[in-house]
Length: 365
Image (cartoon, rainbow, N blue to C red; front, top):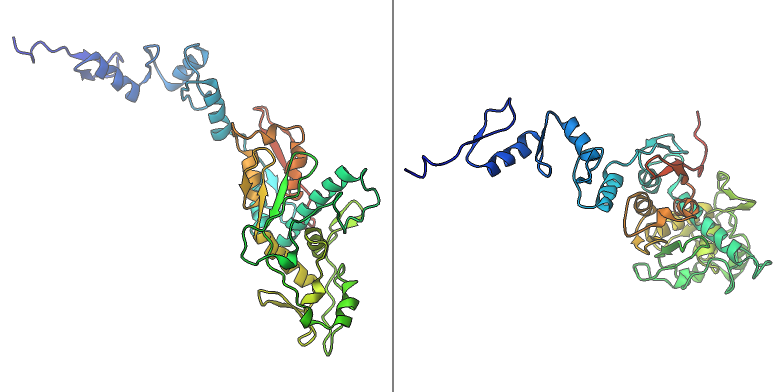
């Protein structure tokens, strides 16, 4: 008798299937691909709902209850659920009213300059003042009379290198400010702001130095910079933070007046941009500083180039970083985002629910 004649034909066990196979192994492989068949338990089911219900009830299966995928461990299943089936967020930008489904996307909306009502420069100012405030609270008992604008060795925000001494293209020039709630740090690669005392007379510099905290008119020979329009309130407690204040937090020796040219009557940036008012010049410098910064996660110490990337990291599911599990995460996310994002609770699946903060002007209706 020939080998072909002795071969066994195995039909599919599903009644409505006419498939016939050369072996039982081929038949079961067919059922896995074409029918609702449980290979582990060797059972047939009439549809995918019955198959999923079987897997959920069976002790032999570790399955995602949403999509029915099998896993080898509960940890793998839980990670899959957090990553692939997260409860969608609903955040509305306080500046323009645009809706977002992820916190990181809303921060990126402001950070990339897409929000018409919240300037990019405001983000770094808000982040800096929150870090300064945390540091002030932490060290307040050590130096109760310390001037928040003049940090010293015992408190406040400090910088390893003077703004005027930093190289414009040096990515290694960074600063680390650690707050009191979890090790959050803001590393800023600051452009080179070389001394330009030759551009302003000594008498002009001394007269203008005392006015560097404001954006008022700057006297000059033959020219007078225009007075800036009032900026929106940007207060934290009773302290008012503007671009100039932020720059002095980064460098206590910062003085915008050394960039004022008595010949043109304008402030001249090392990038060759010219500004008629100190306010516009300082906001430009803050923006340039913002473009060269990096932020470190207080949980895993990983460094991110943007606040949006770090916020996305915080809201993602990770087995290596537990920053969103900490007791002070609400404060951490608020400081990272400069007040754009806040933690408002938890969803039923245990994931963090985010809400929009109130940084920036209110949306005009």
